[in-house]
Length: 170
Image (cartoon, rainbow, N blue to C red):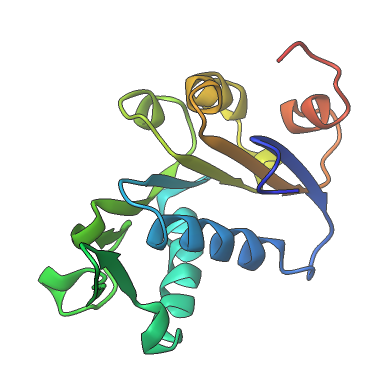
């Protein structure tokens, strides 16, 4: 469903590991396709960076044969954050060989509006006071073959709930 739907909203209950699932899917998209700009958005920058650390953990534990890219008939080693010896960099996972990266950002539309994103994961979207402005800023991403995934535990009377139940015009 994630591959087919460019706008996907997933209400969840705790302990289902949906954040892990979707950060891994976005990592796959970022490392196996060139020129990806992916955003992980949460209420605070620190929370978004915690989501990013999940992708970094998955990356660190991938077998070597998955950490490569193919160009001009040859395989090359794909590096993550090579300027920092592969260590975690707050707010970013950079794959310069394929011109792709994942950025962790706080809620709101301002950061997204400045970039053309390939994908946006909004974690705990129901608890983001600026979820509507972030989604509005992300809408051109969805219109231009990108994807937006919003996941959240249930919270009554929120923009996320309205979107899930088609109570507003998208």
